[in-house]
Length: 413
Image 1 (cartoon, one colour):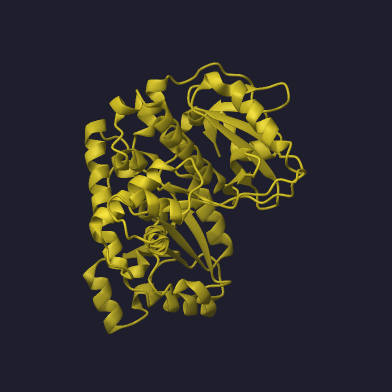
Image 2 (cartoon, one colour):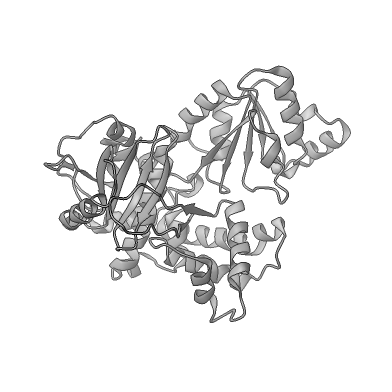
């Protein structure tokens, strides 16, 4: 990997985790920048995909752990037995900041499920957010909103064309400056590698490339909507009429294990009304530009298809909120009830506070978004720490009732 290091939100989270935990596991989709970020924090490193590393481990187990701390074991799942070696070393040394393990896949038998409690801290890394691409544009702090900060108005906004350009810009650091045509080819090749190689390495299911490709397309098409395995099975019926929801579930689980897809789970607050909470999650691809390629939706197509552009933009907002919330350990969920009220994203703070987020591609629809958000919040018992409307083409504003609106490119940690 060449070029200057792009600072990441994860940098601060890594420093905090290494200060309190014996080992930190940095997980995320392949090529999202885990190794480079981990190297910034590491005192020494070893790459597990180097045949010499396997040979050394076979010859002298434990030797891979020798080196300046924190010791980075990159792509540890290639030699999964090092997990127990690290666990034992952490127990012996009883000090924080000993090891960093990076991984682009969860092993089939998940060595990490039971034996790392109290020793390892997991961190989920994602592709670049819009703020990480252009940190100088940050004007609305997500963590600051929880502390009562409300920004002054700034009229500057992106054009629709500029928003589309950002949606199609890869979040994978090595490709983020690639020309659009090259970026499309790189992302298409990435999807092909996922379809034909990555899933096969995990095993556990007979891999049909045509089915996986269609599934990725269906997931990309439903990014802004709650989805079920039954719905996805129906979407795949034209090419796989006998495919069951259970088989779709296994495919999605494999995609989740390599971090190519991510769930946005439903949020379950106490309600004022008698409505029932809807419990279906949303499902997103790891990068909005990857979703656009899965949909075969280039710039020329999205210009004429605001519905698809809007769905991709909502997925981009979820992605960036998840990246930015790493700064304070937050998680991103969504709300939907039986009366049809929805909140596109709920930012949940570790201390129980929460913020409500409405997404509108067009800045001209801020008023509509404000009404929808207000109506949804009237159903919920309790007040949010903030109300936020994230737009593609809108300005930074604080409305009379304290609701903040900003373009996605102005949102920062």
